[in-house]
Image (cartoon, rainbow, N blue to C red; front, side, top):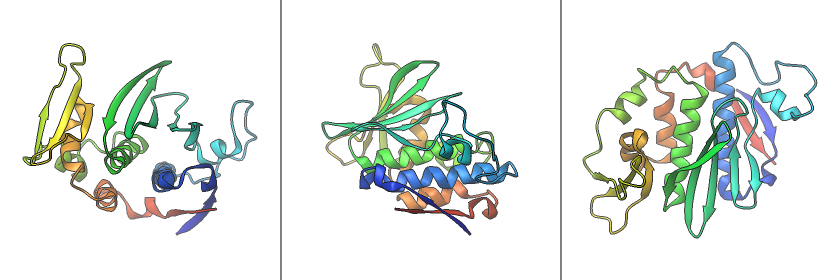
Length: 210
């Protein structure tokens, strides 16, 4: 196990776990490519930071007082925004930014971010993975999915756990089936599930925060 020190003081404490997860999965991506953090010894370009070159990707950053950005300059960026007791996950691509998910509880938002981070880090390797087979085979029978406003927002799906008074929020239709299972998993169990079928030596990078 190789350990790297990261500066967690820049983030609110409740975000520390998901920030560290980004580093873990970015490390898995690098190792899956036969690389490692710091393999690129070049000087940062004008628009880059040393950390971005070291990790071959932009680490999570606070883009405002209530917003955490997972920014991909060449692809899809995600932003976690919290306001009025709700947690929004926005997606931005080619300069266009839209609200993609809204969760009423942070643990659900945190797990859906982990799901997205894992898929993005190792895109292409999840198509036939045990995790995708389990999460996307069918909607969990303990959950009811509905479209609260199909006319104005046809791609939004509301998720309600049967027996609960309030829904958990709304999500993108393509991720609704997976989310119906994710809400019942702990963060640790989801992380373990996402790693199933992947080489253990891709996950030999750990982080220590200041």
